[in-house]
Length: 271
Ligand code: KIV
Image 1: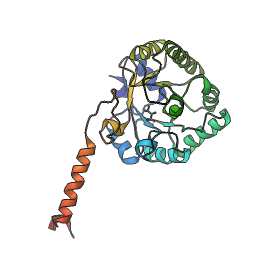
Image 2: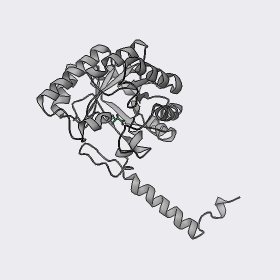
Image 3: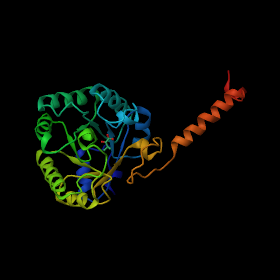
């Protein structure tokens, strides 16, 4: 039997086994109870309480403004819904880059106040001290390399990263370094598929791609993007499985018509 079918609860060890057995890992974001319940019951392996909540839930242009308190609120809502998936929470911008002590305090707050299972940090060698310190407290860490949205003001744009040799080599070295420090998996965002494949082969831990081709160990998408709730974001790597923006809009229009025409509520819908 495949691993994902046999486990009752996904752990970091399960993800490692999945890589060993060449079984792909499916990961999606969720930020609230209702969506997390649907996604978990559908059988997702990993739920990321991503700081993309800053864009998707709060309407900010970047992930920079979201706070640790905001992330804790979203993670608490997700944890209440989930029975099977591994829950990973993004440490938001400014809560771990300054120094490793602050990073540990932020990660401990996430773990203690939400009941989530792991944290995710963006960056390579520059955050290794923070990664080590969090890991030394027994908190599992997921890495994130390539396009790291918290650094958008440094990058200037959301274009594909690591296309030139220097940046590609640096990314490949950072991936090995993060593995040596002890992260249990690494997200590779918007990098050439060939580089993602090379990094995936060089590591024992799983890689999870978003815009990184198919030769990684798993895929992640932002739930609201793949459901077509968000409309303004259409990168090449995004596959839309629905157009919920239109469907929800249509349902709301029907409701408005029914209220205005006094079709709703009917006799069966009253006491
Ligand atoms: O915040 C997020 O949703 C993420 C994914 C895009 C990987 O970090």
